Image (cartoon, rainbow, N blue to C red):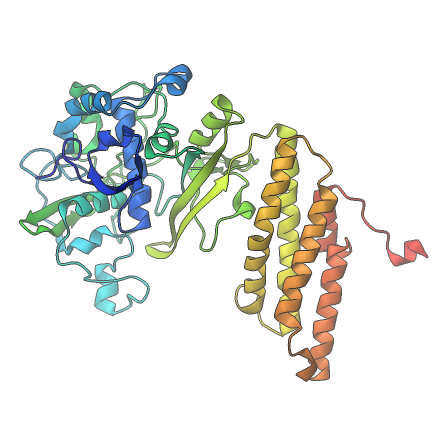
Length: 489
């Protein structure tokens, strides 16, 4: 048996080495970070710990959030009344599993991992990027963490297999204060609210009959809650029951048409706005950098920053922090990439936010000019692969540090950043173009050499403000457009 509140089951790194702890021990000052064997489990573990503190001992208001000191004994006392709801196995309610036994498809334990092959992929032998039959059994702590990760990030999984309340593979964001230890990271992201009483455990979805969606029923946030509802951290879209023996978890029963969530806004995710609704953002394959900041670290018309970051900037302006950004990049049910990045957080007023967003726009246009001209110079077919894609990716990687430096200066009040940024864009783009296109140019036919030379000339022209792309770069930076040659004459 495993109780997730009273037993030690979470692997962590301490200042003195590794350990296995109870959740309440995250308030011990030498506990640094979860130490699961997979990054998606570590990310989900952070969300789980935020959720546990939220339902047991959340800050009541900003004063409580700023002043309360970590206390593992007090946190354990707050968690103990909720322990009944956090048994992984047994005859009573089971954590994140159907209240009653279900008779469904029996799956191997590794179906709990998002990058495991589904039944159809295994049957058709198409599991190239995903894996099948990796584990005959799982230790119960690993099974518990994988179960939470699946329910929290659940992708599409076939007919009736519901996604998480933020869709498949949501983007997870957590404020990470610039101080060591796991507790500051967790506490920085716990919403304001009131603790869940022991007689309110039926607010957790596995403590009541499952809200099924066999007739297309949709579960929206319940009315009457001024604070975030506990189910935000403990959604249960998949109908599962675990089977275990002395070796650990051996099988997972699953039936379709679990809870179908809609309209829930999670405080640890950014959202984008459509004409009719607010939808969660999802990671894209590749590195996450400043080009992705709009609507996540920066305000934007079509995006809404995560609630955890908005609160940090409102209540603790000027305090150093980073934003941890992670999650699975998915294509329907297929995992493409796992994203893990930490970006600096800046306190910016409205004018400074606009100025920084303009720097991002100028870089996007410069990167596009680099990609299309690299493609032309190499004689390739598209900008999504080959030299053009490499150059674009390297462009953002090389300009990340200069961008952060300029943003820090903007936060301190500097306004004359357009010319310095344009210099960075020019220097970086031309260096990458030359590295990809120019080597071996003398050995090519005259027509190919001419195309390469023309492509470089076009890139220089765009970076000097000429043409459609050049106009967009200069307009974003607020620079005067150069006069055309006829006008100069």
